[in-house]
Length: 397
Image 1: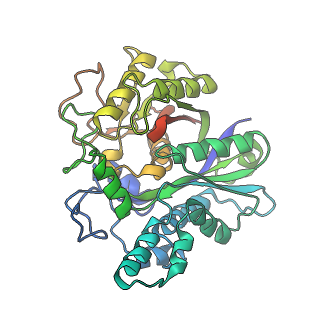
Image 2: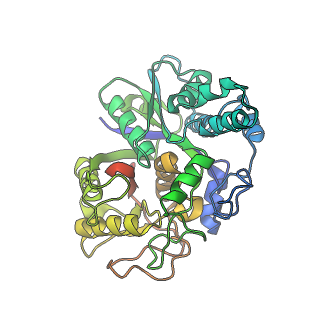
Image 3: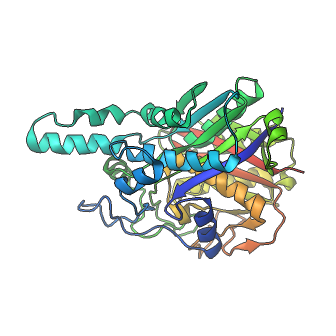
């Protein structure tokens, strides 16, 4: 059974919806800049891919309470757009919502703790009800009317890719007819301080796959796709143009936060996705790199790509130079970039790359490519703990 993409929805630092996002990608407009919502901290100098809207403004867009976590608000905005784009009425269809996050409602817990430390009283303790990762998923699923299957995945930076993979499996095994899958993550002081403590944040705008890269920039956002079975796809007024043809998850079990130098888990994930798709390596037209901008990530991913593709590495780029690293949301956001590449016949540039890495025989694309035939895209999402996932999106013939 094949699984089709019927709709997509996104919000990030480069756009509040699909159309704005495409405009930014086409114009080479990065969303990374100075923080505003997390101002007043000692690490405020660190650039981020922040969405320049308050929680109140996001709540108005989402149609939810501003008391909900920022992650839930971002999730609702993107999921609603994906559903509207699909044109599907879920009545009578077994529908699931599989959402990913790593931060969850951390921002609400931080607000509670700030007041508790200041006043010594348990004021607004209801805020911590939205702390756990599953809360954001449930807060979005209910107003969407999804009751058949609701689940949350949290596997670090591969979370959204794994939610899409899981959704596809549920459709292929006949459990669901329709699934909204992807993920959301919001900026929080906890995340920013944690990554800063790991010493992998760049104090300037990140430069993935550059020889002189110094780390990543964090970002926030949400991205969801609507996956449907063949039977549902046949009944849609808008015929799907893209399908999910391959996916795989692997783990190199090397280190808590680092990939193995040779990219063993990365290699196994890409190899597994290719095997499922039935495609030869020469059929891949574009690789959306995980490409965080850290010394370890870019080298291990690059080495694994060379091992698989040899001297014929497809065109590639890291779009994190646009959005920052959106953690648990990046797999969903970059799945949409991959779908856009097919639909718009585009390959997006790897911004700010000046000096290609000396260890690699290939270098990412640095200029927007338009009018190119893109039939198959490989999208990589590799997380802490060695959790590596790859997705392949293909043009419907």
